[in-house]
View (tube, helix red, strand yellow):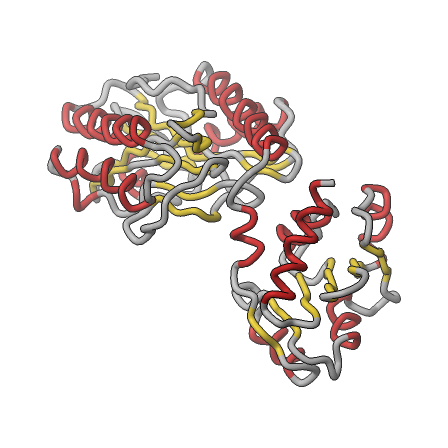
Length: 361
């Protein structure tokens, strides 16, 4: 029923914008509207919407059996294209000569747009479906909660095996082993493990570097369950850290705790960011907090809403966001602490259970 409601809500958007048809190709959006399994790459599955009438899910022979076995909502027909034909090409033929076909303008490549534009008048639908995805229902939150439980459990097991002199590659492999053993369907993104001077890279991929001598090591990771992501970050020290590193860690933790204390439905992303940023600025590290406080998490690990300086809109009940202040000292070290939370009417539900006290291994 939930997919039928989503399909009808999107159909209403089509009608409201005066469109006859719309096509949906972004894998997360196809999944959100139909529950059809993710296809590799864009165009693997294409939804062809009519403002009135049946919705077609056009798939390749590679994807047909899995999609049919999964089951799809009422009012959606599965059509398998011929071998050698892409679902997107098949859909383009359908709307040739039509008026006002809605497209995901923020997702389609220029080359695909060029192939489409001669067939019909194309109209952007913007982030219509992405905005629908921002508020999660109980089932979605349950899947995200399960994904975060797997991540927390795996990290605690990993901590027991970390030791000074271990390479980033080795640390990442231990963590990913426990993530998979814990039930992860896949990783939400490439696991980040960055130590010492490399810890200033917010998206630092693991390397052969070995951490020692009190260096900070940033672990940022997540998994997927039922298509939904988790996301968390912890910073630990391989050996006793220096005084400045302790000061920075405490400042980042205070910033996060201050933001968690005020987060609730109605607060703007900008004000939530400002709360954490004020703590870091008061500690003298404001210019070293180089990213927004957080982002939405769901079918994508980075989605709306954003908890950052440019978002003046109030957060809503059912938003799932990260709260992840960080300080990065070039040539020295970096610290980031990230929790995953559900926005509730009068506060939050923190899905992240891993302790945040300063940890030395």
